[in-house]
View 1: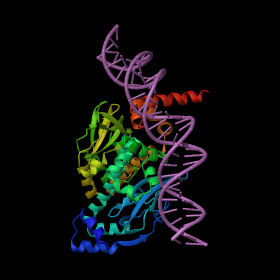
View 2 (view 1 turned 90 degrees about the vertical axis):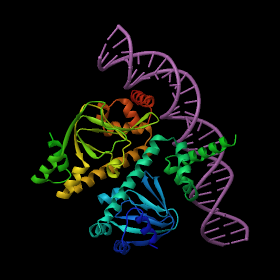
View 3 (view 1 turned 90 degrees about the horizontal axis):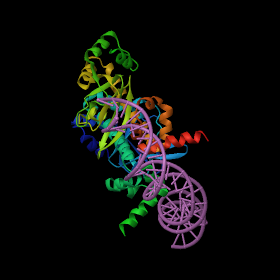
View 4 (view 1 turned 120 degrees about the vertical axis):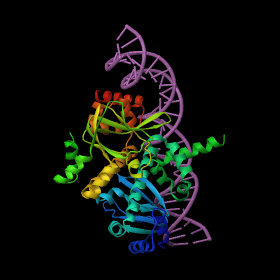
Length: 194
Length: 194
DNA sequence: CGTTCAGTTGACTAAGGTCAATTCCCGTGG
DNA sequence: CCACGGGAATTGACCTTAGTCAACTGAACG
């Protein structure tokens, strides 16, 4: 079952037999059910999560409102790097949207790997870079696009999201109200047939 | 003149005499005039910039429109870490808002410092973390606050910006049109006196 | 003194927010 | 297997506010 995560890492760095074994030795597997949490705010995110099956979202809770930051599906990684890097408690909640099988790679173990096999440092660096890029993209989306454009971009770029995520979370991710998302969809539908 | 940058770094890591000398040896100083550029899109940002005097902003140019990402004043650092970390050309333009004295710490030199004095790695890590935090904060501002609230937050948190940055760039930073910023200011002013 | 550009103002439009009501869908328990 | 309950999604009515385009003002600079 950890084969998938090995394959994922091999897309970033080449591993020899020995390195692959070292990695396998520290990977923890875990199952969580829909609506359960990988991480709750207040906890330190001292691991990176790889999704084997299922989907996750993370959100902030502010004044009782949820603000969804991102969705993740199988074969992808996520960690709250703000918490991971600084060791401070996270203010993110990472929730399973579907039943999940996930793998955990603890910071402690990854740092041991760095020492034994420095090639893993590149992996760590790429993870952080990707998180960076993700944030920048979301920033761009929010600054450059109107709510309607954001909806269309998401529909175009990640149609899978609409198959597997409830609309209210998508609205939250797009920074609009569910009612507005509903109207945007209706408007686009009606425009198309006129 | 590099004393200020030394002081800034010492807030993050303790330096002995030898380490301080090694650092001084690689710091480059530079002066740029208002409206000149530290970096133009297409160039690789292979250095971090420390501002001794003056102010900078960075912006993206998209369809002929400028989107201001952030402002920086004396005693602060900036780098496009997306470009810095990946070595790819930047799509940011870093422009002087006022005449500036800046210091450059090249990636090449910083990496040599890592080897000679591993303590500098912490400095590098903290720089990346701070950039991360900055992005997250901007994200939060854009998702959680209305244009008016963004204006008020900026006014409250960084009044200096309003003393030293033209309103049109502030509008761009807040992701609103200059006309709207003008009306927001008027509205707030009139509400206060009624 | 005139040119230029930042900033403001006006008129208008469109789109998203809010609150309330309704419908739809799905899972659970009887 | 059906009925019911509850949350998700939609719809309606109304309001507020930002965007757009155009005109005007004002200040800085040569």
